[in-house]
Amino acid sequence: MTEVSVFAFMGGAEIIVPPEMAVEVSGFAMMGGVDVTVRLPGETGRQAKKRRKLERKGLQPRLAAPTED
Image (cartoon, rainbow, N blue to C red; front, side):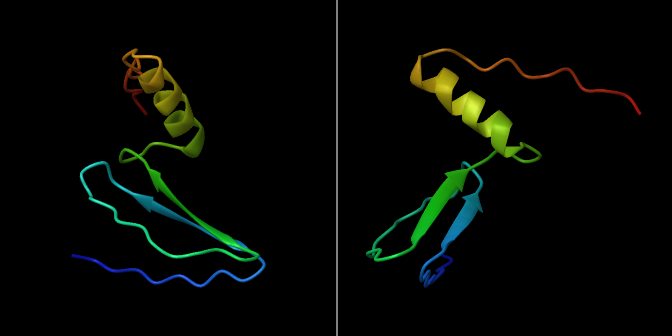
């Protein structure tokens, strides 16, 4: 188990976790905030947002074909 304590005063923090990690959140916010975001390995914030939108609609996200360098 990993425990993270965050104090955000007049600011914010974003905690990014992998999908298999269980997250329990408690606390309160007064002039700040803490967001917990789930992302797949190598996934950008934009890709994660698009994936979550498709999942809410009941659709499967289409994975991009790997590119060769």
